[in-house]
Length: 271
Ligand code: ZN
Image (cartoon, rainbow, N blue to C red; front, top):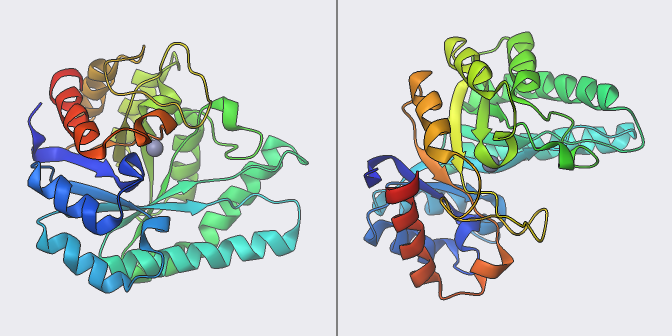
């Protein structure tokens, strides 16, 4: 695959600050960047947006909003405020999408968490619409259903996006979270048909995986059929960026310039 639709999440090269990431991605021919909020800390966000565009990078999305589910109503209110802040940041940055890690609270049922997620998203739709920023529900692997997300399959994400029925709500498909799902092809098709398929995240599932959060693999080094899933996503009408999103303590310890070259090679050959 060529690099014309290649995007990298800033967290993938976490040791680099956003200025260094922009310079190096751009020099390597990468065309898109997804910005994690920690990369913006202490910076003028508008200026960062201009800096990224000066490097000829499309700002694909901001990561991340969400965490709507809490038993405690005060925490739910703070979560709404944080999502409003994320919407403001996305607007300043000049990106049109925010990825949502929707949240879960192990002291209540998953159904209750999902109800709160739906209400939370619904509450901030007016702000997202005013800012021109779409909110993307990203289903997370069920191993994260305790504290990170009560939305664990693409079917659940599709159900929620369709129930919310807003042009400002969509879905992000991440191969790491969804590759195991026997209904994945069908749900990807459904997501595309309803106009909700808005982002596609890439990495691989290492065998064995030694850390459930920080041991993601490079495309081709694990067991995810990345090319096959990409073919389903494209058949469903998706023509946006393919976003490389790898959290890895191991790879963050490497020389990041060499790591970037490995990412590009894996993207070309195994994505
Ligand atoms: Zn993702």
